[in-house]
Image (cartoon, rainbow, N blue to C red; front, side):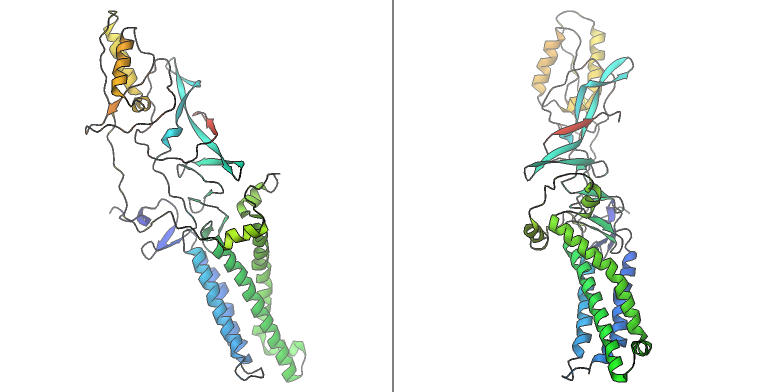
Amino acid sequence: MAPNRVYEAWKGSNKFLFGGRLIFGPDAKSLLISLVLVIVPVIIFCIFVARHLRHEFSSYNAGYAILVVAVIFNIYVLILLFLTSARDPGIIPRNLHPPEEDFRYDSSVSIDIGGRQTPSLQFPRTKEVMVNGLPVRVKYCDTCMLYRPPRCSHCSICNNCVQRFDHHCPWVGQCIGLRNYRYFFMFVSSATLLCIYVFSISAFYIKVLMDHNHGTVWKAMKESPASVILMAYCFIALWFVGGLTGFHLYLIGTNQTTYENFRYRADSRINVYNQGCINNFREVFCTKVPPSKNNFRALVQEEVQRQPPQVVTQEPESDTGGDHRSKVEDDLDIGEDLLKISQRRNIEGFDEEIRSRGSNGPYHTSEGDSVLGSDRRAPTVRSDERHSSRRRSESWEIEPDVLANSNVTETRSYVSSRQ
């Protein structure tokens, strides 16, 4: 049965729940471990610690606040965890075809086919764009067939290009990117505060037991082993979530991502995104979260399968009485080059060129026009220059219906098709 919704035909490695309303990474099962690590200690704390402190304050019912704060704080942390792991982190939709305007022939790099030198098809692998007045190189993603925006990277686990990619977190089972980084930091920092709260109240309960029984620390610990376990657990957890909170405070203050910090920290690069500590924090916490570029519940738009273009060749009238059979063979060779055929937009100009060349002998360029079998004209590919070459016998395997566009039009670096 053919997929009806976008999430059913999704090419990434994500997992969807509730009809595409929730999106997770492929390692979403690890999220269950995180839930256990957050919920179970709080339950133990409420039963074996907070419950016994309800009447330990001058105001008889003030102790209930310890229990209420623990429960509310735990719910708050779980909500942040849900917002981090169950939403689109900033996935950029894939293109169906490479950007058509970036293909070109390079006569300086040619391929020897059947004794004939054929110009090689070149494609820019990188481009440079200006960010805050400084050049930034962006790369082409072969999987998603698009030029990644600045700070975007392709996650090998989720198999998606993610805006402002920070890292893939296995503990939340999701990529951390533009749309969920704020919630990720709030989750980590809130978990740190929760650990401090549980550790402090558990230590306070040990002191209460010592005062009531006029005993030693060892006797109080034996009377409430749950408090000791919670203190040890929170102490170990603080090394992770507390250290992670401090590290991301540094990243936010300097406007870096984890990916950029680990990859470029050895380079003496200028951070073009750094706008000052205050503005960097404002960018993360005070800006509106951009809407998702994907509508996972939308109906799948089937791609129109176009018929291969049929070459329209015309036999010009020859005034020189040249070899007529050789002239027809040249026309057929010209028709094989589909990319150049699709570049011609003016049929009348093409006819005039054929007539003008017909009086001078065989062709030396492979340009023309084509139509679809359904009497529709094939979409054209715009080109800023005309490429001339020797007579060639191979056709380039480039589909004429390339639709993807790139908004980046800066400096381009081309790589030979041999690479």
